[in-house]
Amino acid sequence: MTEYVTQPRWIVHLPTTLTGVDGARALAEALRDSLGHVSAIDFGETTLSEEDRQFVRTRVWCDSRLPGGARCTLPTDHPGELCAAGSGSP
Image 1 (spheres, rainbow, N blue to C red):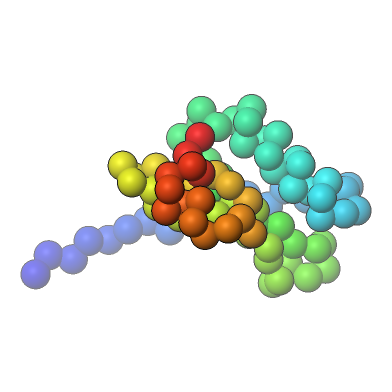
Image 2: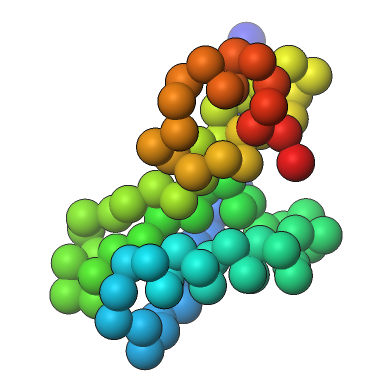
């Protein structure tokens, strides 16, 4: 059996001066909209956390697999049937 060695992925923690989750979510959406073309960034895995509670993370996007291999870009709390219908694609 051949073993595959994978390199660890690195996380960029980007602290902000925002004081609310809604503002942080809006910033994450703006970053995805403006930097979505950068293949080194996995926006589907974006999470938010309070500065002093970084171990408690809130997922921003659903990121479920859609037919054809794309990922759902709707918020995490959307009704599940939207993913099944494929309407979460960009």
